Amino acid sequence: MKKLIKWFAEGLLILAPIAVTIWVTYEIFLMIDHLVPAKIPGMGFIITLTFITFIGFLGSTLLGGLFRYVERVFSRLPLLKILYNAIRDLLAAFAGEKKKFNKPVMVRLSHDSDAKLVGFITQDDLNHLGVSNDVSVYCPHSYNFSGQLFIVPKELVEPLSADSSTIMSFVVSGGVAGGPKNAERK
Image 1 (cartoon, rainbow, N blue to C red):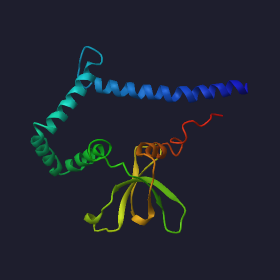
Image 2: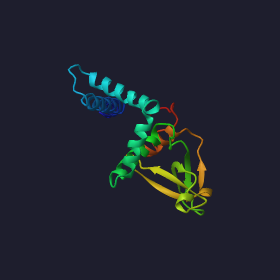
Image 3: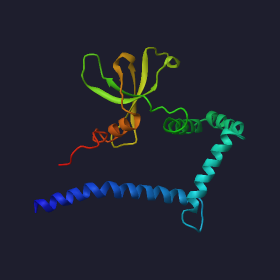
Image 4: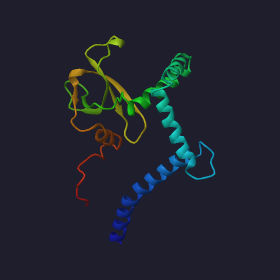
């Protein structure tokens, strides 16, 4: 009976991540595919990706001025500017030329503590806030799409040598992911 339970647990550890990844990917595909009604499955997905790519091309070449004008309008409208700027900055933090989660660090909570947080420096210079000698560090929460921003003295921040995606996986998984890849299973 113990062997059966062990095999079941092992099967669950193998199949669950694969099944959830396939299911989430499929649901995202369907959501995008249904943005454009088309009779051929997958055609809406292809049209949507083509449209987004075409807009990116236009924005970086021919109609960049028009898109910057629209961006200025959205950035000035009361209430909408908060939503628009937050979405724009969040997307820019993960994609685009100004990625923000590319400086993983370990933050000591205080000079006399050994407790530390893992996060990402999002701004090295906070003079626009009237704060000098501090940096902003974003610390994502584990198993969640949220986090917390800390303003900490520079001397309490230690750069990490691992790449950003490894650090993000480590933090978001609660410290479970990002370890040695060839660890022997027990």
